[in-house]
View 1 (cartoon, one colour):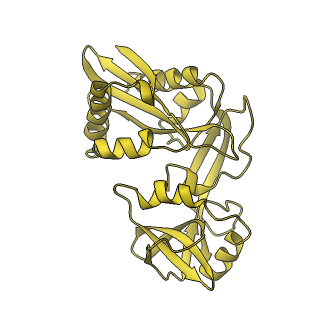
View 2 (view 1 turned 90 degrees about the vertical axis):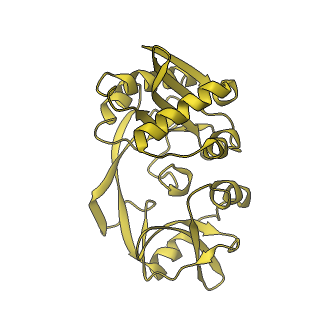
View 3 (view 1 turned 180 degrees about the vertical axis):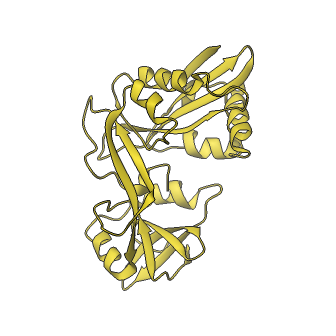
Length: 249
């Protein structure tokens, strides 16, 4: 087994194909080259870090640390970790994750791991475990809380949401304010934040909305609570990382 760790611009065309092969095999379908380019090559924050595991010449595992800056400082979220069937439980995810964290050399990193990937990421240097549930709110009250926050930057909205190759986003208007929504299932929308305009998005009118941004709420769904890991070599993300900048949204 060998591993290759590279920044986005260092990947060859064949290595990008290898990454897509792992992701589409592991997940059934992840996306095409256009999805990869949108997420990693066109990322306005800069380059991400990728690690590919090979069994001989066959790509069998992959992990990325996606560049998602916070408060103007470089930050990287562990995303798209995958190992193809037949190669799991061999430590491939752990080795690929460690290759990424070593390549980042102490930059700020964070993750929302599953109970399966959590031990590997802790061994790779992430720590300070917290639980982040999704919370439910009556829309008028929730949206007033978002009004105290700055709108999501327009340029980010255009890249992250309007140009997304597969997800469909919605907007909710209340008074003179607009709010970004994504539909999880029928009548269930998650709020991403406040927008400066409707950006031409289809409108939705939910009575209740869900959020990743206010974990202190008493109205939560324990079964959807997730772990949060980070390293604090440079700074701590604190108790609040906006949901819209994460790979969960």
